[in-house]
Length: 208
Figure 1 (cartoon, one colour):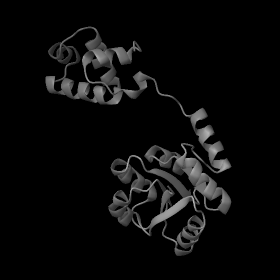
Figure 2 (cartoon, rainbow, N blue to C red):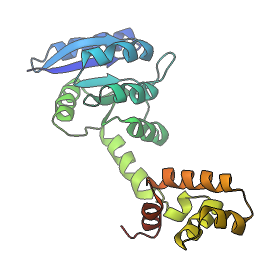
Figure 3 (cartoon, helix red, strand yellow):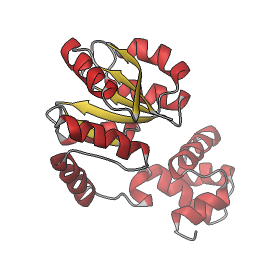
């Protein structure tokens, strides 16, 4: 069965060129192309494409925002950025949004076809200089500790929680309201991705 491919690209010549390229390969099937993200958000879920080639700079909604929305509706669809942008910020934003491939528009046609197939097979194809940028981003990105993730007040609340104090006792100790304590604890649970006091304390002190 051919790999189902869609394109979101506002430039006619680029979109038409990609369509012709994809149609030239018997292993690929072009099932839809869109000039703007808004239309893609509405129509792509019904198409259930395997691979979507996504530009970043689109009229209206950006390609990065488009991925965030469609990814929730089409969890099996994979996205490959196809763009002129190669700065660290755009690359990181695209990957965080859910893109698993990143090609620059100057990529050779045969490499584009190879990358689509590679992405479908579970790879993460990227232009060589983009791959280097991604490596550098993660090598130099500061990993935050649990304490740095939480605010100073949230750290205080969690440490008192770990000491076994009740919400009322924490409120009295920190001179804040009971409701404020609850809000701090709600924020702590969200930031640490936990659901109760025990999980929060264990995660905070790396006991899990």
